[in-house]
Length: 234
Image 1 (cartoon, one colour):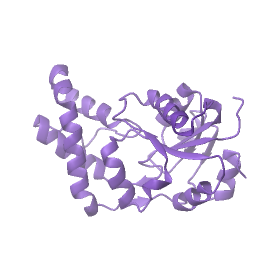
Image 2: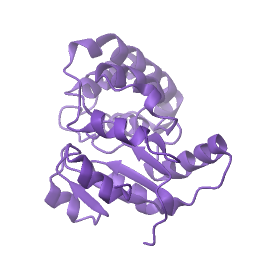
Image 3: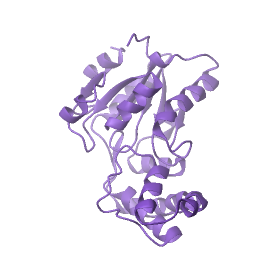
Image 4: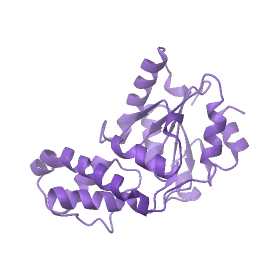
């Protein structure tokens, strides 16, 4: 892929910017129990890289809830999730991933570079999570969220459109970089025509991520110099 100067960097949240130690499973479980009366096979279900609405739909489908009931209640479930997570997050060990704060501080000082979020999270849980990890939300100028579209592959387009509106200029996908921790982040980037850096700070190892051919892959983001070189900002 021929890349231009990086103008927009989009960060995933869970497993990339921060480690959330079970708070998502807890919050979604509480929300589903409240709204549907069931949680589905939440203990064995893999959430990594999926959007919150996708997770809820799949769990309720596995629990035998009809599609009509799921669609009728999915917004209520997301609202219940926001309440449950916000109320309980202080009980969990939520921390910024290695190197994240330092990298964000460096990137913020780069001219003509915009930082944003691209995450499967429902927008209402983003601030509580970032606050718990002590990552300033104001570091990010925009975002695309699971509550915008349950299909993660649609989120790069949404993020780029929001960046274009914010900056009042056209942005080529080749000048956009996604940083994430799962194969779904890589697929999302490829679908959106952007570049992608993978980090093995989530459930996937470097070897597992390399099989999906990201542009670069790191154990974590702590070697700022190497990450900047990969971004093209050294």
